[in-house]
Image (cartoon, rainbow, N blue to C red; front, side, top):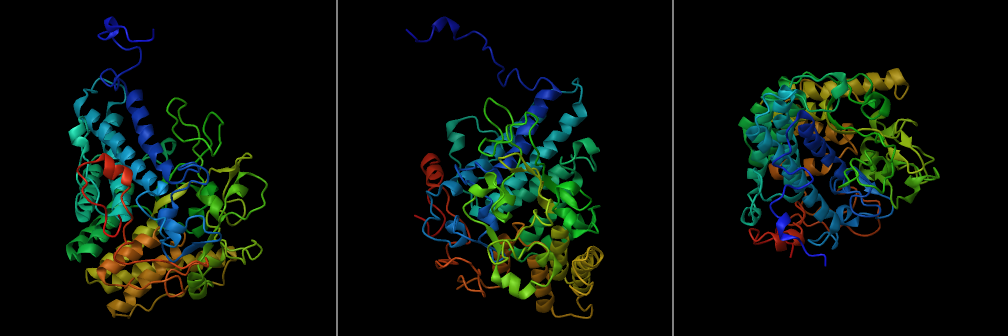
Length: 511
């Protein structure tokens, strides 16, 4: 009784199809919004069910953050649940390729649709650059989490095309660099205030500098480090005088920001963290983020009390650099966890705006900021043979910290002191750079990826690292099960291996 009517097969569908879509600037913008919204997967509460944040994959494996109650032991302890069936590992993989698929559609449509007569034709042309940036960002994340993954740089239109084999990890990173160079020629230098958060040339230069320094670390290429400096030197961003302005909801998209996720309450007012950010038929439901809750003191009486763990500063970081104002300012001795909750994005009080009982944070996640890239430039300069320039970049970061701390009452203006400019020992200066990234970027999600590439470059040795304070410095009682021959990359999901006949084996050490 409900079977199809064969006479309807050749009739036009009621809803738009791809053949009829992309017929106006608004339809191109709708696709672009979907691309930008993809980043919410990394910070949305409901990424994988209840308490389903996935950013722990790069926040917790390093030695700057640990956790209070073991809600993410697969990332924190590298235990047996970090395996190909781990649902959060699968979500990270699937989310990245969903993002890549969206960018590939946009790139294809900009190249094949004649939009020359559309209002907003110039804007549409620039969307290719934005899509290239986000495809590069997705592959940069995939490279750092999984290493060798399938490279898909065109729209998949047949089942055979979907069975794509893994590419060598360095090829994935090289594709990031290729995409960013192409994007740089397309995106604008600046955006009007109404377009805050959209990609500019500074965004691209920042990620391109980062990708080149990473590749240089893995390959030992001086040429990559020198090229990274070329792109870095073209960046027009600056260090803002107040360090805390990089983490406050009141000072988002400031002069130090290169790219940040725009967190806000959706126009519908539906700010429920249990809802997705891009429901299939409901549109954008929730644009707030969840990451800040793991750094929030419990007892607010709202949704953040549902969190089953808190992110803490490690004893290693606290013992070595706890007097640095960039660490001490984010600690509260009355937080209920021995003053260890690292409240970046939340301190001083009120910096992390929460909305309604569900408590969604509308404080932007700072994904790429100038201080991060400046310290990468210090590393590139050192590896390219310019020790003085490397020390200069480090001292610029430390000077900002001193002057901010003194002006705001968080220090006396003596800590952190300037590094001696007469130092010439490469190992000593490299340690300064690594220590500066440890403190300046603590809790921002850079440390684990830094440790891995420094290990590859021979700057440190992760072999034998345990949970003690010379290693990962975990707060948890259970032992860290880190294996340097296995855990530098995470497993590809079993579901993808079963689906994709082009993948014939998982990463080493994973069944």
